[in-house]
Image: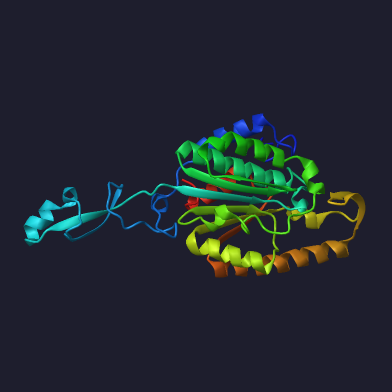
Length: 303
C-alpha cells in the first residue's frame, strides 16, 4: 500500500509529515493560466509589470511605464502604444480545517480526519516551498488554533500532528464553524481560501459568514467521506463518539437510511455552495491526499 493512501496508523507522526514535504515538492505545476489571479482569485490581473505573458496592446496613457512602449507598433501607426502584461500576484492562501467528531472514523485505508490532515500538511508544505503566504485556522475537538505568520510553520505542523490524536473525537463539537467569528477569515481579501472538512451542516449565521468570505475571496471546498460506511455487513459494531464507545446494531435498512440522508444533505450542500460561488469537490477516502492536492493545483488553489 502507498504510505500516503494507507498510513500505518491514523495518528500521524513527524516522519509522516516529513514524507508529505517530499510529495508536495513533486506535485507538478499548475496550468499556466491558473497562476494569474485577479481580485476574485481566478482570472488574470490587468496590471502593468514584468509578468510572464502580454495581455494586450493599447494606446499609450500618461501613467504608463515608458519601458513598455511598443516602438514597432508606434512607428507603424504613428501613435504611441504600450504593452500590458499579466503580473503574477503575491500568492496569499488561507487554509481552514474543520473536523467533526465523526471524522475520526474509517473502514479502510485510514480515518477521514487523517486524510484531511494529510491534505492540510501537503498544502502547508507546498505553500512554504513556493514562497507563498499561508494563514491557517484549525478546528478539531475542543481546539481552535490559527496564525498568519510564516515563522509559525513548525507550530502548524505540530498542531496538525496533534489534530490526528484520537482523543479529540470524544470532545463536544464546536458550536460554530471554523470560518465564523474568525477575524482572520473576516479580514481575508483576494486570497485563495481552502476549506477542508467532513461537515455538511451548520447554522444560518455561519452561512452569512461564509457568503462574506466567498464574496471577497476565491473559496475552494474539499469534503472527504468514506463510502464504505454505507456498505457495512449487518451486525453489532463498537463505535466511538463524544459519548464514548457504544454498541451499534447495523442493519441493511439502517444503512440505506443513512446513505439516503447523506445524499440528501450533500445535494443541499452542493447547491448552497454553488450559490455562494464556492468551488466544491467531494472525495472518497480511497483517493490519496496527493491526488486531491493535484486537483487543487489544477484549480489554481495551489501553484
